Image 1 (spheres, rainbow, N blue to C red):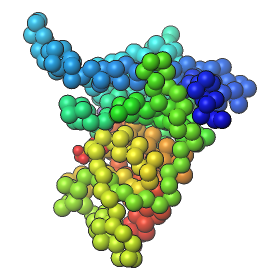
Image 2 (image 1 turned 180 degrees about the horizontal axis):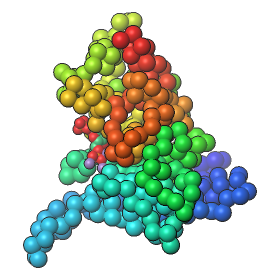
Image 3 (image 1 turned 45 degrees about the vertical axis):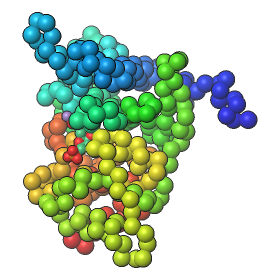
Image 4 (image 1 turned 90 degrees about the vertical axis):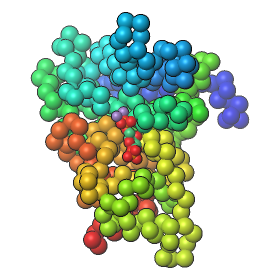
Length: 335
Ligand code: AHG
Ligand code: MN
Ligand code: MN
Ligand code: MN
């Protein structure tokens, strides 16, 4: 049967992406090459994360070396690996990273048609205590490879051609959508390959879990406060929801995709735009959530319809199960 067959007929991520691309006769495999370079970056980060505790013990990271120069932190090293892998793929023209203040315009000789926006290491405050962290990315297409400007990265999320994340957790999981649903792959360390383990992920329509930093409750707006109050003291006689908050967006979203519920980083009095960055946190996760049958809402509009003005713009975000986001939308309409 199927499980038996899968053991000998391995659907690697490269094979999967090649299959998807073969639906497009004009495809020349550029996207497959791009994804394989992103996957390489993720494998590097995965192995570094696994060694992080050990490296610290041996005085290799987050420390001062013999020359007295400060060792680079994991998020800085991860960023360098992704930037170099993406440029050397020859398939990118513009890169936006959380770790770089300015967008990187790829030199003409190494240019391709894809724009990649990414957060090389998300949840970095969780590194030192061994809690799950991740990498998030979104991919756009450029209009004209001969004329690339920062403006090309300021496209609404609805224009993404693909998005995904890799979670460095109890196992290393790569989740990808190219606009035809969401699929999850797990790294088999003995093969060094991501194998399809979560085909066609659909987020449950309803959810029993809410995920938010409740320490900010004092400063929330009314719709957020009302929603969370109702999670704890439901007015309709239903059971209260469970609270789960890891503080790594990748891990909180991964759980939401698989188990359902809602993840939110709302606006508050001090941060009217919330905390999460539009291009490389809000957009990729909103794209995946919609592709999995859920919704993503900013408090004002569909998240993917936002048009960022600057590359590091932030936005409040509510995303998850379809029915939970409907409730949030109603509360904002009433307010
Ligand atoms: P990063 O580590 O890339 O800067 O992002 C951290 C983000 C995100 O992963 C998480 O959802 C959020 O920060 C948590 O913020 P709080 O600590 O304010 O809850
Ligand atoms: Mn982040
Ligand atoms: Mn980060
Ligand atoms: Mn950061």
